[in-house]
Image 1 (cartoon, rainbow, N blue to C red):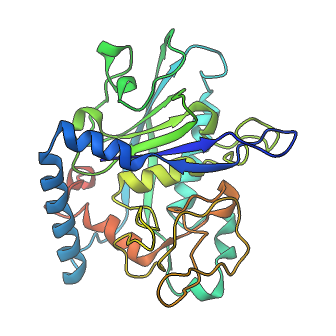
Image 2: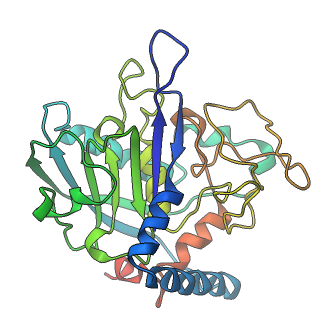
Length: 305
């Protein structure tokens, strides 16, 4: 299953800033299910395993360290982003997944009891670069296949492959959920949104590396917080029910009109707010992530020494 985040380039100001994230997850999912109907069975099995592991308290004990392979595909100098920029992305991931981000203290008191340190560390394994004549790569995984001009993944059962390229169509990035084919496993983020950049750059308001945090969240089995449906479920008990995705930086408290009118957790990484508006995971999300790393879990191979 793939989830992709897309930018809406319509703007009402002279800076022509990107207006909001949107997502084509349903279209991508439908395509994958048509191509591989057994994927639904496999993902249902993973979900049942995850739910059972959480109920029984069989979760990871200690921290997980994940090697990251950056696969950089570039046509222009701007697309061939520097090692320093890639490192800034790793720094963001490590801060966000270890509750060390500077804005973690902004979590409202209402959610302070569920905010969590996921406890995953990402370490640089290698950077692979490849020059290309392609102007964009789309969302059909061409960047992951050398026969289509891309870069094959490196050891995808033990390393997180992170493709950096121009996706096109206003897409910021997308990720493959646990259960998909190893040959396409990993995350893809458009080169404009990798790492931390100046607010004056073209990447604003997605200039703080949080596109990768969101996509790696999907790779670790987290769903969108609104469950990709009106008042849908993200399969996490401690996140409030959302009407739909939120954009920009909503004023707190932002109330849902779903049953009970809960305050929405707009600052959760799995919403669609601007980078500066998202800064927390929950204990329930941590439990979902932990479950995939235990024996029998979909990413158990990453937890091995």
